[in-house]
Length: 338
Image (cartoon, rainbow, N blue to C red):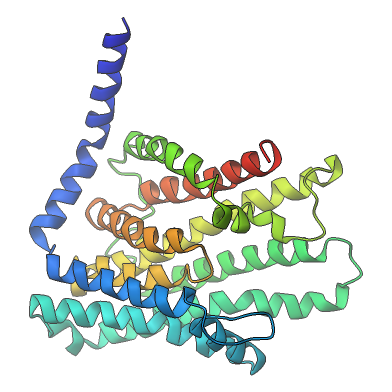
């Protein structure tokens, strides 16, 4: 009986993942090149060096080169410019490497490609700067007991609405006749493969939840000094925060696997997948190193799924699901087994 049950589970997993394996095989056949992949890994190593190797003296201890740049940008009110450079550089490197490896420079001559790259980077850079604007606006209400919580909530909502509104306007006037709203289609969508992917992540997240650097960053709500999740009255604040925290990844998935992949389909084809993964890596610059490195592989996989399925629902399920699972894993490890 146990053998039959195990066999059933194995068949279910492989049948659920069949479509995903087809996408991977098509990408491997259509575009994949080991040289491009290795160069991407070298980029990640280099970025990790400037982010995590702490060799610059600071009054709070040694800091990394990237952290030093961020402090300078922050104190000189150049936060927006910092994000523009941070996002634009890897994206251009990704496309430049792709052109060298595949010997195709034609899309660089397309004005729409240049316009979309600049538009996308400026859009996401402004999104990254909205939180600071919200903080400045809420500074006058600093007497509110949970102002740090309110800051995060309003910031998350503002970021999401801003991205969706701007891209909806752009899509309405440029792409509405060509495709659904950048991946928001359920045609031929099957959610089972993505639930299997989430199930496969459970042991990995459980293992990560025992690591010090992981617990330093998660659960994210621990950064809010006014919220103590051991106090029953604060649980409502915790629940609202976690719901919106997950929805923030909904926006990220829509931008990176929706707009940055599907809006570029007719211009660069599958070349967008790895190039966008470069940019996706650097948005994790304030996360643990393991998460930053794995973001390249996860971003590439979700980009492949989005490109060939023309849907972002699978990526949303995986991305939001993993985000909430990481929060739950850290919560259990920190407050039940510590």
